[in-house]
Length: 355
Image (cartoon, rainbow, N blue to C red; front, side, top):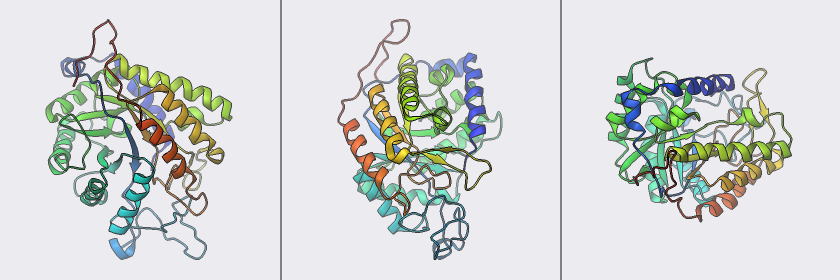
C-alpha cells in the first residue's frame, strides 16, 4: 500500500538528482533502444492470503462474508477474498487479463522468500502457458547508499526467473521495473552501477532527465495527483500534455517510453483523510487510454489489475462489475495493432543505436 505524499516527494527528489552524471551513470546514457515490441502490462499484487491456503488472512483483514465487506479493500472481488497462492485464482486472473489484451504482468516483489516471491513460479508458469509475460516490480527498499543489496536482489531475480520462457525480456535481457520507494535509497550513479553489473533492462519510477539517462526507460506508478479534483475536460487536457511529455522525454534519450493509465483511485477506506479520483463511470479510463495511445509510447502500464486497497483495480468486483476489464480489451487490442516505434533522432542529432 502506498502513500501519495511519498510519491510526490520521490518525484521531486528524482528531479533533483538529474544533475548527477558520474562515470557509472554516464555509461548508461550510451544504451539506447528502438523497435521495442508493444506491451500492455498490468501491475499485479500476489500478496493476498487466506487461512485455507496460507494459514491466516493476508492483506484482507477478516472479511464479513454475509455483508460482502472486506476491511482492507474498497471493493469485493467477484472471486471473493482469495489466496494469491491458489492455482485456480492465478489461472482465472491470467485468463481475465489475456482476454482483455494485457500482454503481461508487473508483479509486486518485496524480497527473496517473501510471500510475493513465493507466488512467482506459479504466475510465471500460468502466464507462459497463455503467451503472456512477467516482470518484477522491485519494491524492496535496499540499504541506503548500498548498491550491493540491490545488486544481490537483481541477480537473484535474474537467476531464479530471468531465463523462464514467461519472463519479459528486451532482446536477450530480462526486464525489471523499480518503484520510487526503492529508487530513493540510491543515487543515480549507484543505480547505474546496479544496472551495469547485473545487465538487466531497468525501468525507473519517476520522470526526470537523470532517470532517462541512467535507466532503460521511465514510468510513473500512480499519476493520481495530477488528475485529482479535475473535471473530465481538464483531465483530458492534462492527460494529453503529460502523456506527450513522458514519451518525449524517453525518446530524447533513446529509451523505452511508458504511459500509465488507471481506472480510478480511492484509498479513503484504509487512510484518513485519503485521496479519491472518481472513475466517472469508466470515462476517466477511456480518456487516459485515448491520450496514452495518441502519445504513441512503446508500452502502456495499467495501475492496476488488483490493488484493491486503493481502489485502482480493473479486476471485476461486485460493486463495479467487469466494465473496466471490457474497456481494457477495447483499448489494449487497438494499441497493440500499432507497429513498433522506429528509431528517432536523439538530442544533438545522433540517432540511437538499435539494441
